[in-house]
Length: 65
View 1 (cartoon, rainbow, N blue to C red):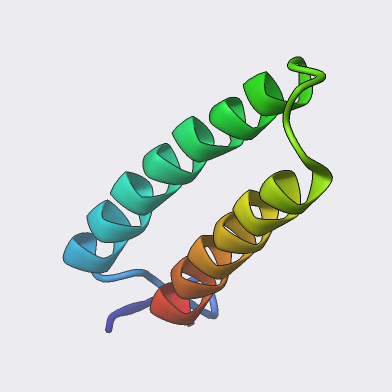
View 2 (cartoon, rainbow, N blue to C red; view 1 turned 135 degrees about the vertical axis):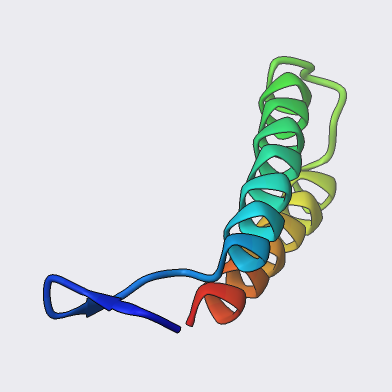
């Protein structure tokens, strides 16, 4: 990795992978929001999806790290 201004730059491939993953997470969060608009959806199902989003964000964080 090249340094600039005292910091480390992200590799372009890593940056693109993280961007794609975050777009997927955004779609997943939108789906969870739609779940919350439906009063027939069980709280356990919402919690499972929130946990999945949390895991996806953790993967992005690990990728960037």
